Amino acid sequence: MQNIVDDSVLVKNYINGNELAIELLIKRHQQRLYSFIYSKIQDRDTTEDIFQDTFIKVIRTLKKGNYNEEGKFLPWVMRIAHNLIIDYFRRNNRIPTFNNSDEFDIFSVLSDGTLNAENKIIKEQILSDVKGLVEELPEEQKEVLKMRIYNDMSFNEISENTGVSINTALGRMRYALINLRKIIEKNKIILVN
Amino acid sequence: MMQIYSEKSSDFRMEPKQETVQYLINFSKSLTVVKTKSNYLIELNLN
Image (cartoon, rainbow over all chains, first blue to last red; front, side, top):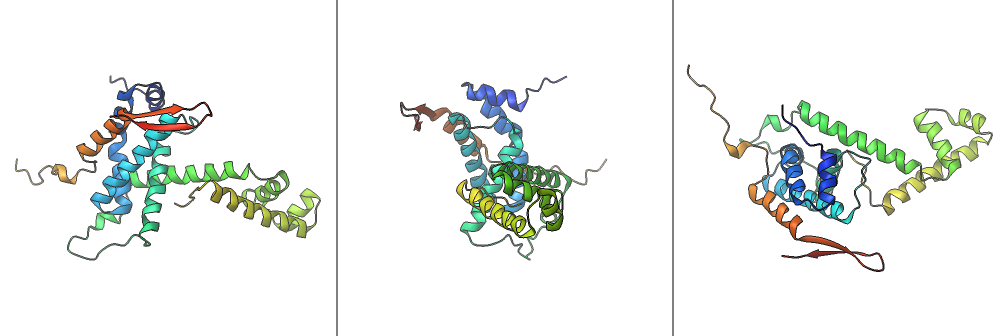
C-alpha cells in the first residue's frame, strides 16, 4: 500500500525549509487546480499564467509564515486561484462567454462532479470566511445580524428578544452591513462564487 | 479487438506545462524571506 504524506505535513516541511515539499504539493494538485482555472477561463495561456500566479502567492505566503493552518491546503489554494480569476475578469472588464464556433466544446459548459465539488469547497470557504468576518462586528450589531440572517427572525421577533425597539434593531442591522462591507474592503476580500 | 478510441494526446491533459512547474520550483528555491529588526518581512530573490 502506498504511504501518502498528508498535505499539512508537506506544508510544515516546506515552512521548515524542505524545498522538495512544495514540488510534491504542486505536482499533487496541479491537475485539479489547472482544470478548475481552465473551466472558468477557457484559454490555455491565461490558465497557465493564473496557475503560476496562484502558486507564487502560495510560496510567498508560506515562506512569510502567514499561512493559517486552520484551513485545508487545497481549498486555500483554490480560493487564491478563484480570486485571481475574478481579478482577471475585472481587469478585462468582461464576464465569461462562449464562442459559438466550430471549436465550441459543449463539455466546457456542462459541469461535472469534480467541478461541482470544487465549487462546493469554494462556497464552504466563503461561508466560513463570512462567519469569521461577522465575529469582527460590535456585539449588538452581531447579535441582530445573526438573528436576522442565520436564524431567519423578523425584526419584530428580534426586537422582542433583544429588548430594543424595531427601529433600533433595524439601525443595528443597517450598521452591521455597512461595517461588514468596510471590513471586506479593508481586507480586500472577494466574496464571490 | 479493434481499438475505436485512441488515448487522448498529452495536449488534452489538463495540466500545466512542465516549464511552468519548473519555474515555480526554481522561484521557490530562489526566494528567501528575512525579518528585519523592525519586524518587516523582506523578500529576497537570490539566484
